Image (cartoon, rainbow, N blue to C red; front, side):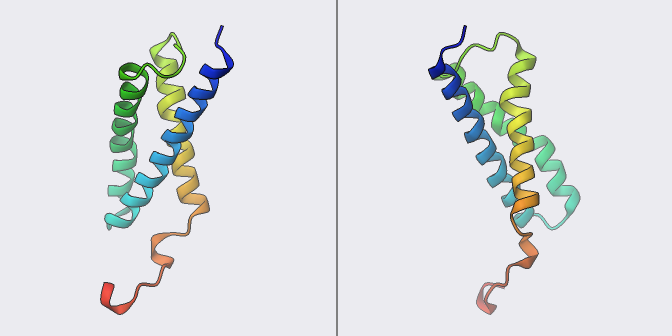
Amino acid sequence: MASALSIAVLLAIVAFHALVAAVLTRYFRIALDSVWGTALFVVAGIPLVLLATTLLLSGGLGLGPSLGNPLLVLIVLIAVPLALGVLVDVLYVPPPDEYELPESAK
């Protein structure tokens, strides 16, 4: 049975992963000119970063509970935060085109 502390650490890791996914999605939307490039990096690049941080946090540092099943780890620590991060960036943050930059930055 998971303790309250291990569940809190798991939720903190999920929140951290969602933040990383949102920031990387925003970066790719600003840095890349095409929609397809952004979509490709969101689908292929961000999960690799989330996998690396999962291995670092849960494997190297030993944080979080043992979920027992690798598929459950992929769903809880990679797919759900990825979906939340992309959702936050796409729905709640204005598109990069709506920001007006000064003439010297263009």
